[in-house]
Image 1 (cartoon, rainbow, N blue to C red):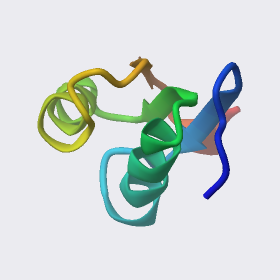
Image 2 (tube, rainbow, N blue to C red):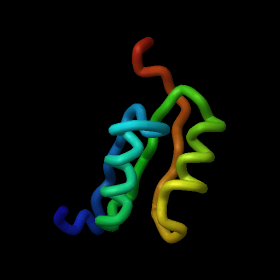
Image 3 (cartoon, rainbow, N blue to C red):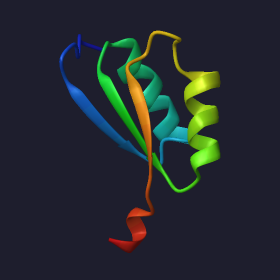
Image 4 (cartoon, one colour):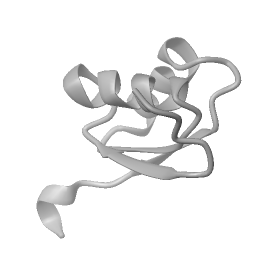
Length: 67
């Protein structure tokens, strides 16, 4: 994957599965990653347990099914 330094990436469904895998890869590529999911606790856990300690990321709780 190329360098995403100074890029912002929004990943929906980011607390598990493909969404979490994408968030991991983008964070390794130095992107600022905004993880979006329905459960704030799962969001905190995804960041704490699955992303690099130096990752520039945050979690936003949202249900995009109801936009």
